[in-house]
Image (cartoon, rainbow, N blue to C red; front, side, top):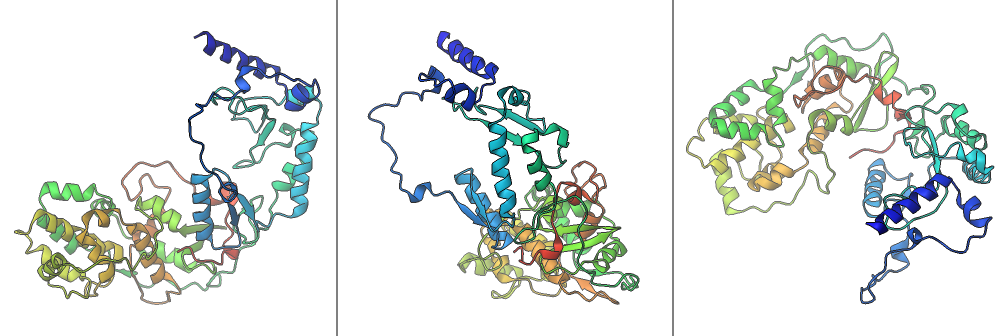
Length: 461
């Protein structure tokens, strides 16, 4: 207890001095450290890990690569290292040099001036102190550090030390990046042209045709399963579609047609921007995931997973009345639901999952066969349940919307209703039936980071 109190006392004593390394160590030429700066003793027989130079190479992330590649690299570096270097970021070298010069100017500032910014209150815009982990790490790490939070709200210049004020002024203004992905927002930048000239948008003469939200399918599914089986399906990873149906979601085709007719002409296939008043509204995999809660993780061979044909699969496909080389149609699933009463619980569960797959995820014409490569996954129930069906459903929808001619009557494949929910995102509940806070439609502009659709050239998937 005495030792612990002693360490705590030493930490507090150092913290209260607010002394920087430069002023507290170098200038007085201190030659002896207190015990908190010593590492705990290590047993002599403890094996030391073998480390090579390649093991110590900090990950480098090239912003010139595809967006998907950037996300994967950042994820990997964050999990394994906690740090990474970015290249081809588009920040001018003059800005980088000024950042370094500003840091040096601050640390060489008068100690009494720096002490006025000393704090451990991370809610402040600008904080400075000499040890981030003084009270939590096993050994003290004396270093001078400061942090300035630029988003979501740019700091008041008066809250920033004079030595660093020029840095914040430079980094608060829009900076064109190499890929045009991330720029600080001060004013809405020039938007890409619209697909349809203002005043000449195709009128919504007819309702948009779609194949999801099939009442016959839902009714047959409900009758085919016991109450326990139906509740289990509803609470599964794909239950969002059942909950959506039970919410009595009203289809408003004019609202979705509005989004499609006010689209901006961007290069990305798997991202859509539409004007809502004067500001652009984004619909991408991120919004789809947030609205549905479906698994949207990236995997290789998303649409062509390896799945061996087994005798059990041959038997089950025969029960479905489906050719082994094809995926079931919605009509075939409805017919199977009406005769599955004596099937095993496991086979009925497979049939229920295929109902969601054909009726919502693929969401194609009721007589159109689905993809057998994906349908066959149902033979391994655990694999099927954990598959990134959100990513599959999103891709089906966006493939159908790409270059869609919306004059006159037209049909959209996939879970089109999510677009209506995106447009109405400020309502009380999402498709998952959960309460969520009110969200302004311009939240992606007001977040402090602006995604410029004009320069997005790489596909998301």
